[in-house]
Length: 370
Image (cartoon, rainbow, N blue to C red; front, top):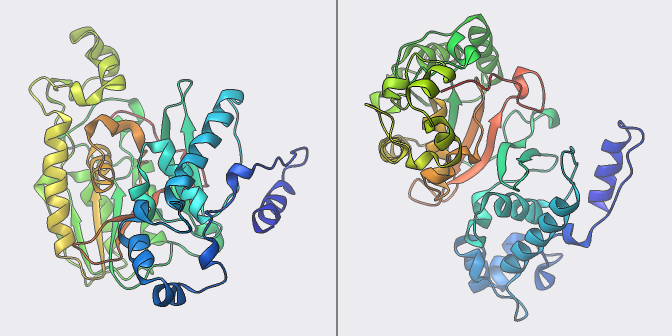
């Protein structure tokens, strides 16, 4: 009933839409726990509760594995939907558990990642599928329209990962990499808006790539947090594109035929001429991220670049460079990564690529080169 009521409220603003139901969108089946609070579950089912929090794929109730079953249910839903629907914008309204499973199965994450994704009441997520069925997560768990700027969290380590505002080279689709290109007027406006968006968040520490575009974005945000000193971290710099830097896509294709196609299909196999490969970016990004997490007790701000942010998001979810295109990072966007079990526990992606402060649910920022 709760999902149907939510759907009806949304559809009321879109005359002509009809509502279809699917049993594959029902919530996770936990019959022995229904009607109980989580505290009661922990008291009455201590072993199962431990699995629920630490190894959800091993949770067994009534001789079934509900999280594993939920993953199969979500996979069947995508198979049915994508077989019959192509090229359409489709609204899916579900529940906490099934929505996690839908997102995870689309992205290739196993049942062990049940607690690695957060879904808030009324949260909006956007997935884009290409003709082959490959999914990119455009945004996840947007909650600003509900009155919550960011998803709620218990007192724990929270990191806000921001991509810098737009540059002229982003707009022109020119590869910039580690060339120190400043924000353009639109990028400065994006920095101002993300600063306003985060002004009430109690930021404790702040870190940035030393390049002009993220540094200027970070300083704009910290204008509302004058007590916080910005720390510049060289290993947060964008991927080094080597001989691609400063060039348009047509110039790169002329000089290195076929490499752009390889970059779009198998990016982890590309060695930038006189530059980096994604394995190197993953290594330095995640090592730096772990160091920042270790210093975080409450909320830290990290402002970096497209490739760095994608490496951090993918890496914290256990994904490698081959999944580089799975996650979108718009200019001026905010991603939230929490550590509810402490900085040595599993990371949780609580929201991703929030661009609500830039004009709406869908990401309309520049889709240009890195």
